[in-house]
Length: 319
Image 1 (cartoon, rainbow, N blue to C red):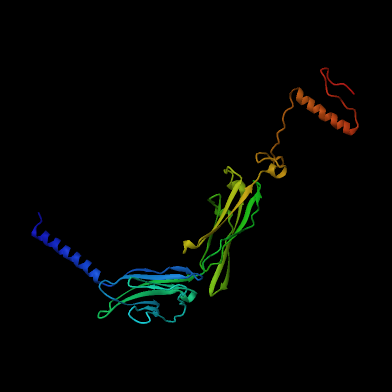
Image 2 (image 1 turned 180 degrees about the vertical axis):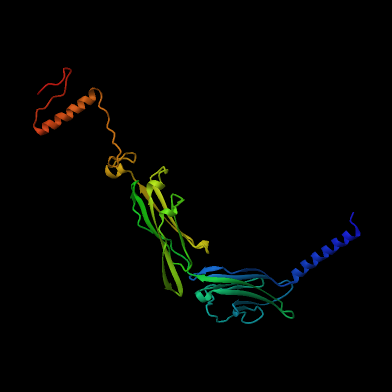
């Protein structure tokens, strides 16, 4: 059974919790704000904030870039929407904005360097209190890779003693791009890679860069455990700050044997020029002897010399 002191503590805790919840339902507050952190300048981006008015009436929703207001929604005024000119801000007009008693969502287009900055959503309640709630988020506009990286320098097929020599070049990006090579799903070791080459240029007020990474891989070191002749090559261009901007390119090359290259035989043959012997069947028995003598007879007929007939049970005799 609770003592008087414990009972008093429980009652106080209950009323404190009730008061906090009751006050929360009455207060005007911002419940969510969505502004992307990094966007591509070619995109159209959506900024949105949602709110709980509590017991208040909505007076206005205002959007700011820095300290400059560029969009206002005031449901009790005519017109309800007012757009103010701000450098770097262009409201998309292909679809209507969505602003009401619960949320306000706008879309920005024609982005550039000046579109980067701090964005603030501010909600105002009606008279007589004019309560305010606001939130801020930062957005950075960059030029992100759009195209897949380009793989160049590959041949269609290779011999086991050859090297795979190829280059991977990323699409242009204002953010650093990291290139990775993979062969048959395994990362190519650093010892087979050359230092990444970077080229920089100016475009649309962005300093763009693209990178090229060369690999030189001895096939017999990397694919000696593979069971088939297909070698799968992949290059990934990744932007560490924006994982969604990563792009990849793939290619498949063929591993062929020396014999298939020189003689048109199957992949299981051996290359005598490389020091491996080509096996010859041992001639045993009467059928093998007949084959040898027949070959000798044909050669001597061609040369105009004395020709021996095939042996009978008595051995060889001159024609």
